[in-house]
Image (tube, rainbow, N blue to C red; front, side, top):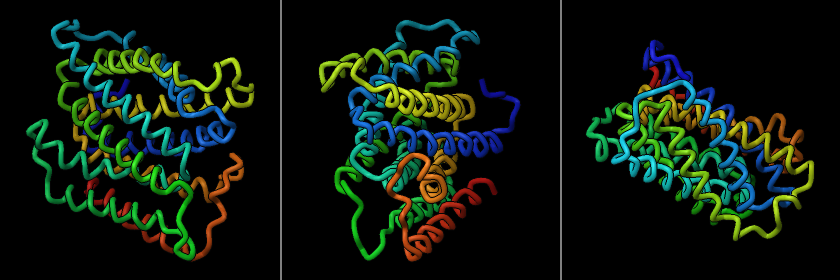
Length: 300
């Protein structure tokens, strides 16, 4: 569990950065499992069970007694999470990692908009500027050579946008209700409910789990563990420290990190996105500079 004596200004920068790095690696690994034909429904089901198991560890750390009248709160948050995950895995399955992950960064602006509406906490002008810089950075990160479009662009953008909105509501509600529940009680409840919702996906399987090849299990399990680990780090940060908008601006660096990892080590994962031209690299460097400027604004 995160140490609450760490200053919030430090925690909401360092922890989201660590989570962003884990996410970028996890997206590459899950993309490889998708290429092996595991499919959206089986990926979501297995990943949600693994993530729920990881979050169960927080329950062992103790916490306040649960009020049954408030169980609808983790239920509402879990529903947002479930929709967001389906959209996330769909975008990763149908599109490129270097496009899908940056699109999820739109969550930054959505969180900045929803935070004052749902929590009553004001969002500073500096944070709004940082959020807009992040979105501009995401735009330049998505540039392609010769004006060509990435594969599955429309479905990637739509699924990514839906996922960003669902995850934005998730983050804001965790910030809103987390302090009263305690992170070690609210978060396990959310992910247990999410795992229960996932059993409804079994009817959508094109083949049973037993049909997944051994190599596919390795990539799927590894990607799910990475995704679960980054979720624990990031969501716990929101529950303990709040500041969802600032944390999300730093977390948006996962878009930059995903591009860098595809460029540097994408071949380790048999990824075909790494063949980028010099013009694309220049645009993405500019996008990276904008995103780093946004992070500096938050830290300053």
